[in-house]
Image (cartoon, rainbow, N blue to C red; front, top):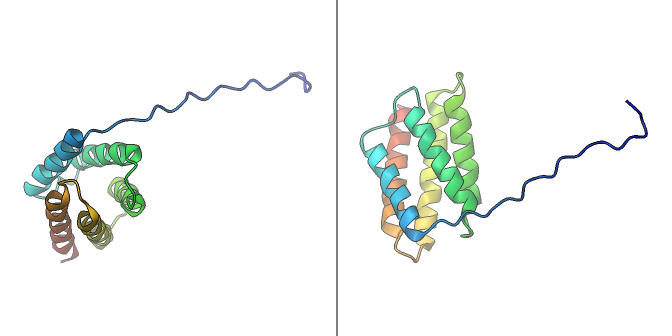
Length: 133
């Protein structure tokens, strides 16, 4: 190859901002609460991982303030669930942190999500307690 030739570059596709409606956000909260209401997802993690992917997509599209810690914790949870060396107490810590963050967002929520987010917070903390035993 000629060292003076220009390096071919691929043009990055522009990111299209995903719009998530209030109805979609409500549906995601409801789906997650229903999933967790049936107990913790199986050890294979397929249903839990799909739910985490949905949350990551929705949170990435959100312009609401105060979600950075939740985004980080969901990423950590996904990594922990896909690792074969993750211990139960590690998952418990992440779930407890997610529960605490969900409660904070619920306290600051003014658009009808407060109740569902508080419920999600309680469920996550309960799951954390079950895993830490």
